[in-house]
Image 1 (spheres, rainbow, N blue to C red):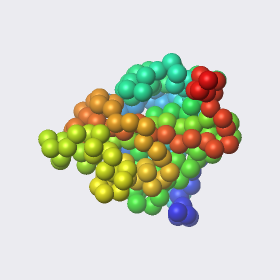
Image 2: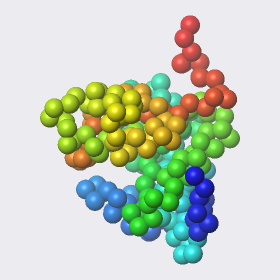
Image 3: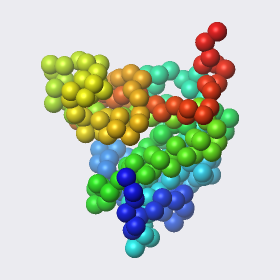
Image 4: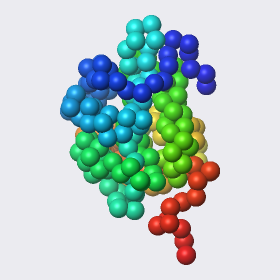
Length: 218
């Protein structure tokens, strides 16, 4: 999908913080939004990993994709977002980590359906390639799951979405975008009632980079 001419992807700047916090409040109404201090820390730790979708006519950010580098062997696949991001501070960023962790991607409701999330993900994949990282990992919400949680186990729900026999508003879009499911996990995000607090760990593997030694089978 070609990005409309009135949008562009760029790196986050300090002047973006107030607008990003405002978008965060709208997209995640049940969570505490990022603070300006946290966004400044993200930028200081890993400036090339904090992407913004800008609405060119206004110069305002309308979407973001925040990332950090991790050595996932130091974590467990079931670890929640709070653990993987050091409570949203990104203080656990490891400049030598072979995995790019997609900590957050969101787009203002007023600017959705223009391919911005896809373009932001493409930008992060470009970073994976540029820094010769092995893969990118993230967590996909399952906002269609709560409606069937009483009658369908989460792992079966995810299998059906992967098979294409069921559509999930978020996971199906990730699969279309080239991500693969690792496994469903419970408690990845707090207060995600639409997903019954379930999510799917997803990854995109860089075909140009071998896995790090700790992931090579011997």
